[in-house]
Length: 328
Image 1: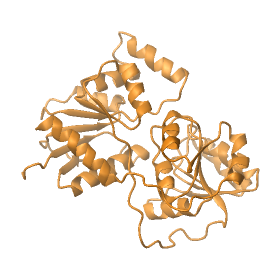
Image 2: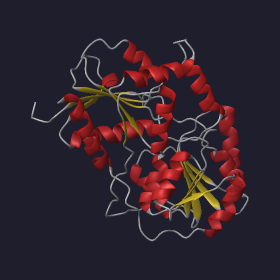
Image 3: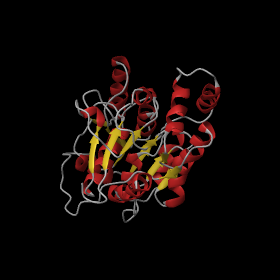
């Protein structure tokens, strides 16, 4: 193996045949960027035979990761964990704190803490996530903050999405109750502004039917799940704004991509979004209630140029430094 090259194993995420979302994109982009730097990077669940590695990077600290680590007996190596906690403020945090203190191992809150405490390093996406994991898990070996990245903007932009409304707001991400797309569609549609929604549906058939009915009544367009990142970027780039009213987020890739494209975002005042607003005040706008969104949209002027969001290559460079500090 060339000097400095690492064998990096990755763990976590939903199999592509079942679904997936931002976490799986984060894993794939990180893996690709590290491979571009000359490292041997592979996902342990995608190989039926055992492979050796220098570091294991687990994405999420949920029970599926805990279960795999419980049975980890081959290839001892430093463990890095990116918890990617998506936890609503308030009662959910209180439940996590209380349950993690109980002397009962077989609970999801306790499993999350056990995964973090086993790691030689924890990678938080934001300062707010760093504070959260240290509050719940106590003293950890090492916690660093390395956020998500974006792909460089292409120099030749082609029309890949077909017909879109002349003026619209975009909603991007897996459609779920946590992200509140249905309520956002209804609120924006009542003001006469069109919506274009990108994302697969997470929920029951009855819930999907209600969502489709809400989109139809509001005059919106649901494009479904789009595999081509260039097509999604174009939807975001042409939009008046991205509306992203989640009740909980780690660090939204959709929001980062929108800011990088020069499109303003209307978001919930979550801690992770407040951090982005401090860095990009011209791009990030808060709506405390969905009732506030239509009026806010009318006041927005689209920024003239994209914002300098870190690229995945820059994220990989910072992770490489962390890995090497644990291996060499």
